[in-house]
Amino acid sequence: MIDPQDLKHCVDAIRTGSRSFHAASKLLPGTTRDAALALYAFCRLADDAVDLQRAKSDAVRDLQDRLDRAYAGRPRNAPADRAFAAVIEDYAMPRALPAALLEGLQWDAEERRCQSLSDLRAYSARVASAVGAMMCVLMRVRDADALARACDLGVAMQLTNIARDVGEDAREGRLYLPSDWLEAEGIDPDAFLRDPAMSPALARVVRKLLREADALYVRSESGIALLPLACRPGIYAARHIYAGIGGAVRRNGYDSVAHRARTGGAEKLGLIFLATVRAAATSVMPRSARVHAQALPETAFLVEAAAAPRARAQGRAESLLATLEGLKSRDRPRDAALNGGWRKLDHPA
Image (tube, rainbow, N blue to C red; front, side, top):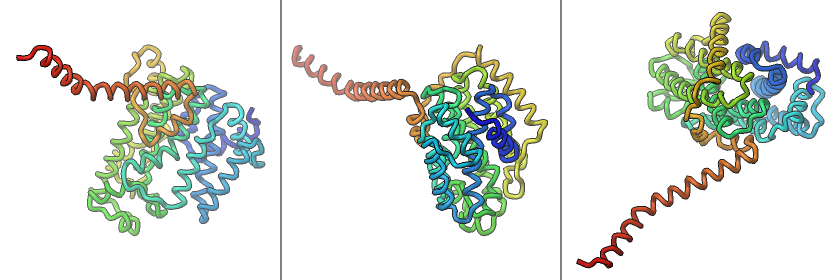
């Protein structure tokens, strides 16, 4: 159980550090909300520890030590660490999930560039989808399809954040937009970092990124129906609030260099109301076939780590059956040719 004083510290940290999540969390049921706030506080601590330090690799190593201590049941004497250690114990949190988050932060420390959309998805999987998978664990959901859609949502949210923060990141010496997209638009990544400036070409890159996010938001929705009914409004709220940030970027003409898109309090309330309505509708709407879509290749390792053993075994069995079916399909033309040949031998002209 999370100590109430530690939980209060976590709530205060999220209220100031992640207003969008704080708003969405209010719609989660009590026990899930408390665990989610503790989880997000630890993730926020990890993100800030790297962002705000000059020696970023040292900061990541320190976080790895904190993670080691939490999993050993001997967390550091800090509220977020103690609360996260309680979450680990109460929910049997797979270590691979927070470890993936720290790997993503290590990539930040190394100032890695994303050469392609796949590279960006791989980064987003670590710093965002890992959190989505951990949220499923907190909701006692270990179904592989639900986890895959949660990972879709995590990537979509991170792509939205990147689209919103292009200028802010560049002024800090960071660039997450895929280099091949920039170069295709005639933008030199190094020159842009030296002098971040808005242009029609950059607007096209930001628009393309938001389209990728939108496709994943749509695909992620089918997984919400697999979550406990009481949890659905909060997850829908997170989906719509973050997508609303993308809408604000569009209203700014995709200029996220001179402007930082925001959603106001009234807009958040409207999106929360929409989330509540949509969550209620999931109990009567037919399930979408999208729910069974394969996980993104870049997030599949998270699904494998978080899925219950039965779900993993079922997934491997389905993969084996698909492989066998593929082999059978490949062999059918050959078998037909052989059978035709035998028929000719049986009935010579």
